[in-house]
Length: 338
Image (tube, helix red, strand yellow):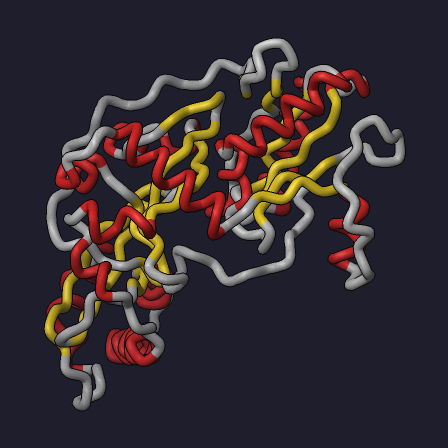
């Protein structure tokens, strides 16, 4: 029985024999993919002639099938069926995605995203980022809602523009196309129950509104809004009235906010976040294990828990960029994590 590496090499070498004959395949390769929070994963990429995007079929579970005794031909057939299905669903990719080395081509399509620092300490050195506590702001190219490409240091270097300009552009775009929303937990619960929300903003001075929710209008990838100037201004205004705010990293999709004066201890909140991450949050959606604080005096987001230093800068990964299917999730209802 072959090891994982040998299995993947066989898939790369032989999968074409199992794919439908009507597919005009231009490129087949096994590649290593860096996934947020999950590290390196091995995937099969099959690209059709004339296509920019290629689906990624992760090999782990197919190797498990092989190890469990499933005949190799059956495993190959299953990989081929999944690949063929994914190829049929590839969306139309905007023209500018074939020009991602050009700043002028992509600058209007940059957005920001939030990534956990501790969980991605080996990956962040090769990604332009801005850090607040254990949360990093990174940039992505939005392919018209069909996926995204994470902006690496090597890609940013090709644009030959100041890094600050990249972040300013991405944040400005994000505020327009994915506006932030600060609402009460009551309204979020009403939405989940499909009741009519009140439309009122979160009022931390109201004892019945213990938690506020910071996210985007569509409740997707909303943790990045903590880097929006308008959200920071709103939090600054709130902190003037109620003092420091605890910011709880529920997931990459939302943050929760609660006045620190309500008496919760940071160590208890950290324990709660850890337990919820382990039991309720998909690993790819986890943001941080640590509660943060929006300081009413400095108007900055901080984290009192020591964060491990980032790894040394990794070597740049040059080569043809591949669109990762599903990087930009479809609109979903917010899952309560805490």
